[in-house]
Structure formats: C-alpha cells, structure tokens
Length: 281
Image (cartoon, rainbow, N blue to C red; front, side):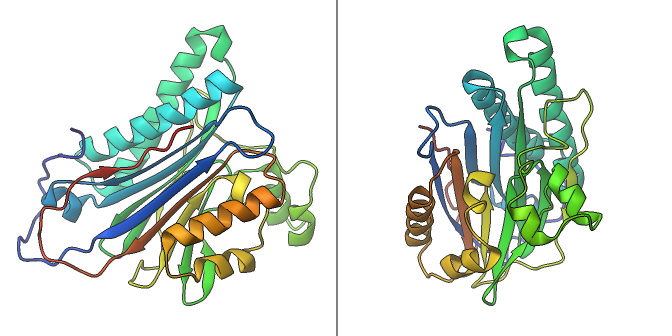
C-alpha cells in the first residue's frame, strides 16, 4: 500500500509520536443531484512513515458536470495520496510533485475524451508532521487553523475576486457578495501545466488546535468569526453536524465538504492502524 513507504530519513524509535483524530462530512446540498466533492484523511500504519511524512488530509471540489467533476476530484485525491507517500522526497517537494502529477493525469484524460473536456478540480491538502502543517493548494477550497479562539485562513483563493481584492479594487465586504465569485483563475486539470501553492505554514498545529479543510460550498455561508464559533466546540462530530445543519438551513445551493482534524494526546509508538477516510454519496 502506498502509505507503507520506506524512508531514508533518520528515525528515532523512542521518539514520541503525536496522533490525530479526523471527521469528514460531504453532502450534495439542497440543489445538486450529484456530489462532485471528494475527501480523505490518511493515518499511515508504518511508524517511520508517520514520523517522516506524517498524516495527510485532502479536500477536492470537481467541476465540469456530474461524470467529469466527480472523476476529476477522485483522480486528485488518489494521485496526490499515492505520489506524496511514494515520492521519496521531503514533504514540500513531495506535495509539489503530487500536484503536478494529479494535474497531468486529469489533463491527459480530458484531452483523450471529448466528453470529459473542461473537467478540473480544486484541491487543498495538508500534510501534518509533528506540529508542522505543509500545504498544497489550488482553486477555492480552503484550509483554516483554529487556534486560541481564532479561525486563521491558511490558503488563498485562486479566483478573479481574490485578484480584485489583492489589488485593492474591491473591499472584503464587496468580495463576499461579488457576482463573479465563482470564477477560478487556477485549478487542476484545466491546463497542461499547473503550479499549486506549496508551503510550510508559519502556524504550528498544537494540542487544542483544529484544522478545517472545506470546499466553497461550506465557507461561503459563514464569516471567519462564525466559523471560529463553531470550531470552538469540543467534539469534532458535533462540530461537523452543526456546520452541516447550518449550511443546509442557509440554502446549500452547492455540494459542501468538511474535514476536521485535531491533535490527540501524545502517545509512544503503538503501531496505530491506517485510517483512510473516503466519503461518497
């Protein structure tokens, strides 16, 4: 299995390893007949892999219609997971290669089948290694870190509206209500070559923090302050249920996906089982 990668990195068998809980929810919403989102959280079974490559959380939001959108997000999840753990590279380079390979796979498939032309997907992935967060991001899905009562957005949207916001042409309030809010400037699979944002977050993932990865079908209904209010809860299952119910109550015109991760108490090497969360409707 791809998460049983052998590593050439140094490994201390007596080192304390941090474990993580994760909860994933994905929903078609109130208006869509199909779900083009995909989500996964991977807890490697091999202790050396946990130490060197960590845990991997991914959310992808496909586009291009039912068949092609679902296919694109699925390819992104599968390819990034496999390439990341099999690349034999350091985390940032592994994520970069994983993004490039996922783009290549989607682009080639779309180029070979006219029914799939135009398909693509957003993707936001976080590799969690000890208390470090390595991010891969393209499109308008997002990563947030809840820390000390605040929800900190770690990723920046690749959208036309974000470009206007960065240039100072519109205000944050205007950005939230802009009619062109759904126009992406980058996504996986929609060009032969694509570069993802790949970086190490300046924020540490510490005990008591929570990581939220989500598609735009979730966050478009909440301010950052509102999200922080939900994330202040103690139980990931309850938080995900309350967020889902609120999105549905507010309209849920699109698919939405929630992936919540929190650090558990530190434990010594106990060969924890692999857990790969894949939610499908």
